[in-house]
Image (tube, rainbow, N blue to C red; front, side, top):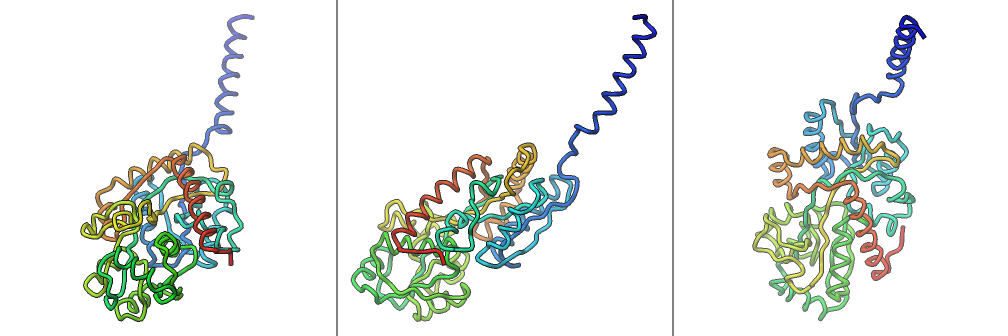
Length: 323
């Protein structure tokens, strides 16, 4: 083949490669706005945590991250909307730790957590606080446990939303402490806290900020995490107060539909870790009682598997059935 023909073939080959390149080159992610689905209403803790994170990610990834509230059916409406979305990274879920126990209490939660979602990262953790009425004689957790055991069926405790972390925490507490008490269902935290303060309700597992705000009007007996909270350093963890091994913190994560491209998951995970290091985010989370906490996608997957086992045991021990 002469030099002239070789030059033609070289030129044709180059054009073919250049012409084929766009067919294989993926667009950089993200190239359009990303939706965060929050399975609770505006103003909730989930909503707040997501909006603060979305603001940071919008800056880091140069695209708008918007929050869409889809409450209902114990979170299943929003969760189902995400699992049915295209797995392209443009629809994500603010997923609570309570999703690990959803199928044990909520008959509508028919999804398979490990099969139907893509784990991306944990974003925060926060303990709750066990609070008791100031009208009771017990001054600390050990005295409270002794009081409850000595009066089976006499004390009352409040619950909100079957399957939420405070709900699991109080049932775990009752089981580990050996307390048989009356469950009183409330529509919101404020009503339960008011009844604890006035003595109409004996105890309740409260968000940390609520316990701090009402600290002088009730007794804050313990926090539900394995260690003390920096926001309530004088309040013991449950394990210190007489229940070794007790650990029931809340935590939130970001998940996507099953089948997301690994490269998109990697971009999101890296950006989330950067966002969680932001001084502004850390300050805003701290004021809400949250501690920023990131993870790898694999770390989040293992966390959910671990807690699924814990919730299954609590449900079995407490005789809880899906409703």
